[in-house]
Amino acid sequence: MSVLAGLRDRRLVGAPTRAQTVAYGASAFPANLLLQTFSAFVVYFYVDHLGVPAGWVAGAMVAHGILNAVLNPLVGAASDRRRTRWGRRLPWIGLGIVPLLVAFALVWMPPPLPPAGLVVWFLVVVAVYDVAYVAVVLNVSALFPEIFRTTAERARGNSPRQLFALVGMILGTAGAPLLYDSIGWAAMALVLVVVCAGFFAWSMVGMVEREADEAVRARESTVGLGDQLRYTFANRAFVTYVLGSLLLQSTTAILLAGIPFYVRYTVGGSEADATLLLAPIFVAAIPAILGWSWVVRRVGPRTAMLLVVVVYGLATCLYLVPTTVLGAAAAGLAVGLGVAGLMQVLEVALAQVIDDDERRTGLRREGMYFGANGFVVRGSVVVQAVVLAGVLAASGYVEGADAQGPAVATGVRLLLGGVPVVLAALAFVCFWFYPLRTAAVEPVGAATG
Image: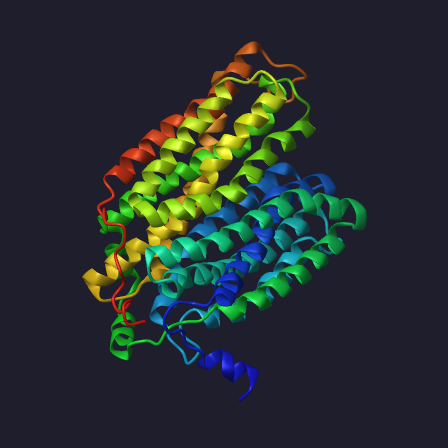
């Protein structure tokens, strides 16, 4: 039997092994390394390094955001409806990895073109990157509720995945500048592509689908996109979950966007000191992920979500206090506990929603649920932009000024220490009405594997 045939014919029975769990989790490293590098540096590269007008790049990024949001439910629904000898998810993942890596590299390797040509290059290459990224990452995520079938399995299985994700985020933020500064942008892209290819290859060991009931799969293939959307957004458990998730992820987006302003205008640090505020968040989150795994197993997704909101909201209040960079860095340690909770509990809760949907409909629709979730939470970018712009405008911030008025320091302090508390309180209300109150909703057939 060939290697490809062996991969094609694998089916998971019972709980995954430790090797499969870790290998599956390894997929989060390249996914987050690529995402973080792209998000953090692509605007700087095209505007500052290539000289493309900032307004043009901003318009291209808006198009990128819209395309990414729309692709999520479309790819999710298509993935749910199509089954091959390889399964439902693996063809998307296997066929998407190479275009994803090639498109990512080409983003940083444009030909010598005038600014208008560079914008066209950006739009075309990033469109390929978006399609491939959603195809790969959404289908990897859709495998999570299928591979791990109980709340306890999911809490344990999600830990290595989120640890790999954190390392990818850190290296995407801190490692990419070291690479492009020393070897250039094109070489940086090639190094990251090679590393990501290795991790994706490793992760295939853990991407194993379960045997399908052909009668159920036949029913799933007949459900159109309109019905998929209607069933999903009529699900009270999903609606309360996804609104709470949107609010919490908006909070995180506001914190990350506001920290450079907070460092400079509120605690009087330099621009480089922003790293000192971001690093403690990640440092605290790494061990805290394991602690939150225990909490989820002990109390179940709903109670864990409520606890996460309380911890996260109270932690962000600490940004109201510091007057120095070190004090703000200490507050970041507490915020990291909340960030770890978000990373650990949200996907476990979404998997529970999918299990409950299967009990009511008889269908497994992981792709659509993860796709609809991705579509909604992209709104966090809009919430972040509106809130940040509103607070800066209300406090009298002047773009490009060497100094700002005292109201700016107060406004930015409230941005980090006040606005997140309000959003967390609204998220608490959403999760309070989350109807799945048992510790677990076992999927159909979980007991028999």
